[in-house]
Image 1 (cartoon, rainbow, N blue to C red):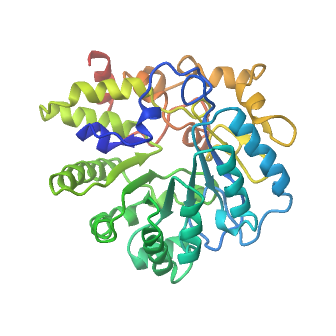
Image 2: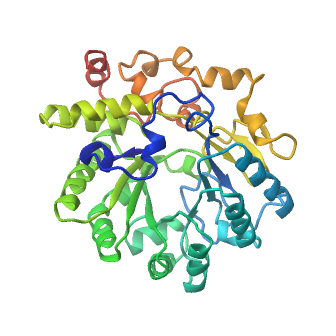
Length: 391
């Protein structure tokens, strides 16, 4: 994640303590912890989103982790001292034992966040989520009513999602908006931010597309390099604008670490006084940390380096403890991944920003045919890449 709020304004939120911390142990978010874990706890979903990396289905997949197996898995996360658990799907609220597991996680002392489409959050559900101590609810919304419903495959999804936001607000549950950056949704950014202000939404996370699951069929929606740069310009100006008007909304982008470098170069060219600190933050973060500071477990118990790289399986929590799998002491692939700078090829290998980006997202490189090859979503020019060595 790249926090524009932190980079451009210097304001800190909870995740920044992990995101911009040097000296991690190579297999966790910080020394003495495991990674942040995304648990795709079910494949079932009531929507049919065009970009779904999980290729979610109407019904749960046969053989998903049982309640008992899920509790054993949560036990292992607590012992491994993971700093955060993100419950995702599919749609997590479709698990019949969702609140039982949420209660169990609270007893264990796990910090839990929820990723949801929001359409199932009525007032009672929102109140229960807040009561059980969920730290943050990320609700996905992809543009205006027409764009969102077409993107999510169900008429009426937009209105039900907005109701979910409002019910969380009534319950005083911290909530954020999650949006996938496509050619269609980027055109709706001004309207999205108007909605954010009207609804008092505390956080906006904008996700770059990843060609995983059904997302692999969305090549025509991938923004051009110019469109991505224009979107970052808009988001930077919106960050300043909200701050100037006293609106406390955190803005982040996800899954493309060249965003941070682009923002730094933009600030440096403008002669801004935050350029030096921005470079320090990028260097402290170290770029993409899939397989080190973030990992994922799917509904079957398979462990992945992140939620998008589903073709890479490190082990299964039914067979081995999560911490044992994650430490990967005998796993040659994990050793290479955690020392990836020596193994990257092409444009990434020669990039002057490798220390700050770390090869970006490997799931996109894999989708392009070479796990160790360049990430095709990088929009920095050759001059910008070579210029990193002199900064």
